[in-house]
Amino acid sequence: MPRRGESIYKRNDGRWEARYVKEITIDGKKKYGSVYAKTYAEVKAKQQQHILTPQVININQYGTLKTVMFEWLSVVKHNIRYSTFVKYEGIINNHIIPEIGNLSVKLITRANISAFTDKLMQKNLAVSTINNILIVLGMGLEYAEEEYSIKCPKIITLKNEIKEMRVLSKVEEQTLIDYAIHSDDLYCFGILLSLFTGIRIGELCALEWCDIKDGKIYITKTMQRIKDESGKSVIMITTPKSEKSNRIIPIPKVINDIIEQHRTSKGYVIHQRNNKYIEPRLMQKKFKEIASACNLENVHFHTLRHTFATRCVEIGFDIKTLSEILGHSTVSTTLQRYVHSSFELKQNNMDKLKLNIAI
Image (cartoon, rainbow, N blue to C red; front, side, top):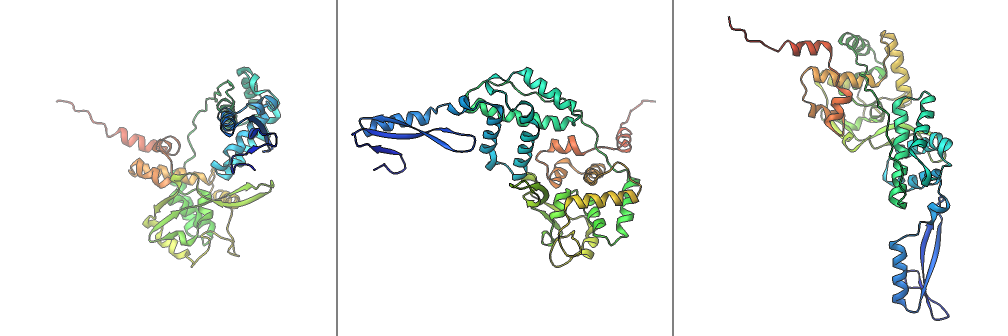
């Protein structure tokens, strides 16, 4: 009879047998090995030796990059957001496997990575997209190093020039406000809410009236369209982008009355006539139509967030406060990505310089 939980048996021939997992294949199946000894203590020691120094059979037998990437993905699956998992899976299936999936992990060189990068660039993908692909590849190779002690080349991402985000000018912003404030359209209300709080489109669409109370907006969830495990595109409401994205935003007095005019007892803040939610894709489409009616060019919904952050800086917000309102993980993110001072602000700051000239 086996010792409970140990997979150790006394055989009919008098010897002791201990089983151990010697391999987990790419489809998650376990393959077992056995060790033998005359006594329980001896076989237990042998079993522990195999547990402490696992046999690197899987990587030798199935040593392609494809295998390693899927093995890594299965390991990290439960430690990342589902939407992140879907993103990683798409990158692996659509970019990494078709080009270099059949390469042996042991034989991958910097030249292979360079050639792969060149192919990605030939597809006219955005630099940020290429870098995301390379980062996922790098995480898979790091896993191979840590798990199987295989020396892999380090991934070097492309230099990505930071482009200044589109921000509405004060005239454009006022035009949009004038249009939205004179409309009973819930899409216009959503635009005003985002323009004066900086919330993301997914956070807006997931917002319910129970989340707006006591002069505060409680951001605890976001809405996005992603593929489920069957591959079907579905709307999911999940936790926000990061831990810092769970936040409380004070409602500015300037829009408090507008919020109360639209308030209902329950349900989604931005909703369709049947009270069903409005998904981000539809909200973006409606925003484009409204922006076009206001003669605003080269704008998307996230422009509202950029504009909010910029106006806050212009009126003297301290960056730490702004970073918390935006839900950024670090203050540097706020500075680098979302704060874009206007030329007028730069001129005003320059004019503060004084020169004492003795007459």
